[in-house]
Amino acid sequence: MNDYPPVVAKIANDYLERVKAYLRLVPARERDEFLKEIESHLYEAYHQTPVDDEVARILTVLRNFGDPAEVVAGRLPGTMMRSGAKRNLPLYVVGGIFIALFGIPLGFGGLSVLVGLLLALAGMVAAFYATAGAILFAGAMFTLFGLARILLPGLFDRLVELGFIQVGGPVGEFLDHFSPSDQGIFMLLAAAALVTIGLGMLWLGRYIFRGLRFLSGLLFDWTRRLAHRIRRKLGRESRGAPGRVGQVSFANGK
Amino acid sequence: MEYPEDGRDRRIAQLRKGILELAVMGVLYHGRHYGYSLIRVLSERGSIPLKEGTVYPILARLDRDGLVGSEWVESVQGPPRKYYVLTSSGRQLFDELSQELDALVSLVQQNWKTSDQPGSAAKKLVVRKG
Image (cartoon, rainbow over all chains, first blue to last red; front, side, top):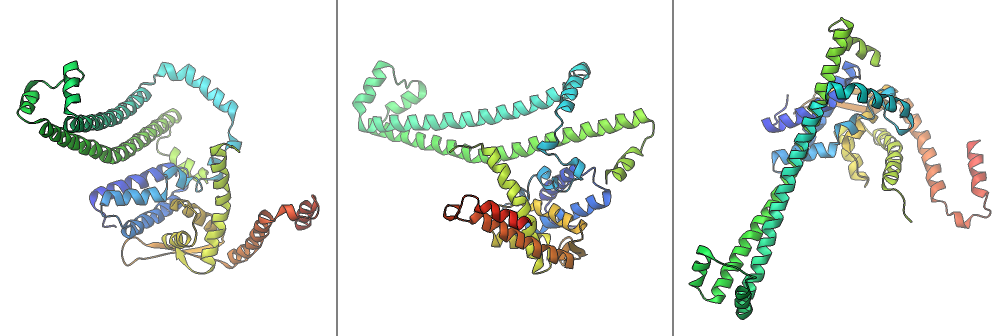
């Protein structure tokens, strides 16, 4: 059907699945036609987008196309439209009471796992940026010390005597073989390396952040779909008519 | 003067929502298009940031209301494309809506300070309504 590379096909199909999940109450024929049209758009946009990297290209296409929830907002049946004017506050209150009465005994284990995973992901991102920041800070300090060692060797020696700067161990022994200006150059080289690593981490962070955002979106979507399947299954079992409820609800959805 | 950021965004979105449907009809008024080509025309001629996916629900609504006709056409490369064309009733509605838009735009752009009397604008509105 298309000539996407496998990873691009996976991303595009996953996006279409998310749109499909949102459109579950739209009649099947209309929904399939809508999805087919989006698929056609994504294919054409992918081939017209001038970005070299395949993954970046499909992500650009999907970003330009919009979030699935945003895309389907105008396509859902009128009764499904979410608008501020139609929010029924008492219903939310009753829902809250039901959750408090039955939700807690039944357990919020799944929700806890989800929140835990998201917190872990957020922690990883925070740790990554903290590390990048620490490396950049170390680079800045090395620059200062390197310049001080070259331009103000007396001050540097005084700071070492006072204990503000401590260079010991093999590094100290190694540096002792060189003149103060050479030591300063070594420090500046180390500073350049640290700053490069720090900036590289910040640059990589962009992609990591994007990937994590994508993963968390997937996680939310899978959880929601799983909950939906479980609800439907429970509903079928309670009604004792397996396999027919979905069809009836679709027919009535129009 | 300060105002809520989300309130401004919501109002801009509402404003665009109505105009976008008219813009889509305007493009189709002058030729047959499929979704992607229509979006390209809108993007090239307008400077409004547009989420491309929002055009398809509009096309679906216009199709459902009989204001556009559509047909699937096989593409030389890739999936088939759904082409849209404005129907005669769509053309007629577009003409009427364009006139309404012109009236609204002129109302918004009117220089109120030069009006003769404070109530003159309100009088004009009443006349238009009739």
